Image 1 (spheres, rainbow, N blue to C red):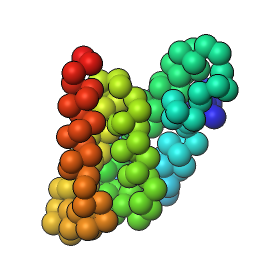
Image 2: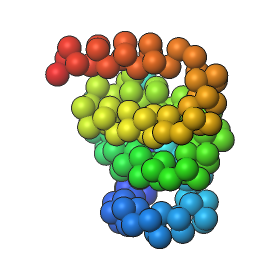
Image 3: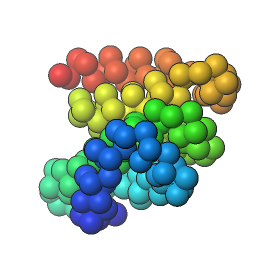
Length: 151
């Protein structure tokens, strides 16, 4: 569930990941695994229904946790090593795609799409993602066109 301490730590980490040396050190220390663990622990809006009243109150806090972890993930996937580590567990990219579908927030969608774009940077990872998720492009187009209509 949402942990304000995680968000505070991610707020400190996120600007540090702009530096390639800090990014390499983060990845060497299994930072990708920890970031993805935090992402997987954050519930999606569909997982919150009926658990909190009003939904908007809890969703606001969970959304802020997602924003920070996604910002860190998009910076970690700038490097080839980060992309390989991210693609090591298909549940992580599925979670990002689920987030795109459920959070109709412009910033989260753009950052989530940045992560997906980074996985397509080189041919080897593109081939792996395309083979594992052959309908990803159609899914993203449908999700984005739905969301663009609401903005």
